[in-house]
Length: 152
Image (cartoon, rainbow, N blue to C red; front, side, top):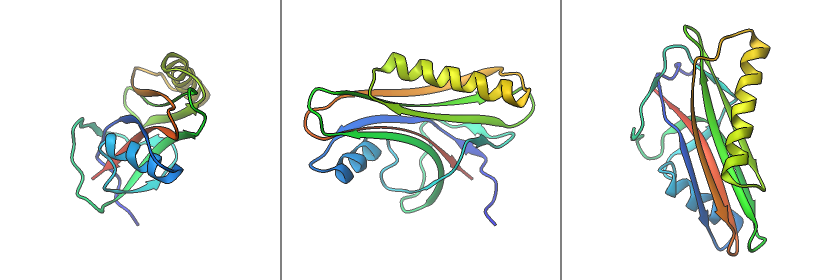
């Protein structure tokens, strides 16, 4: 069984690549999470977890991460990705991810709306949020990625 993470940060970045996988990898690198192994998780932030921007995770680590991304090979297309974390007063939090063919503002509004609904559905009070968003105008093959890595 894995231990419960104690720290997290938000990452959002966009990049180009010569193919889909390299565009994705380049976005990971630009977002400072390119040298870790992401283990995709769903959207619950453990109680008592601390926000640690700029936290460095050892290369090669297996890292629980909630993330969303979009890749496009349509030159001129605008793509975006966003993540948001909603906090309750004294319980767990909720993470939401979004990616789409839109701009930064639409992606951010989508995250805000999803966080509000997630807390309403759970009957919890949303007391604070943190959101990270990126947008990218595709040149050849582009990727926008947003993530919430969790660490110990």
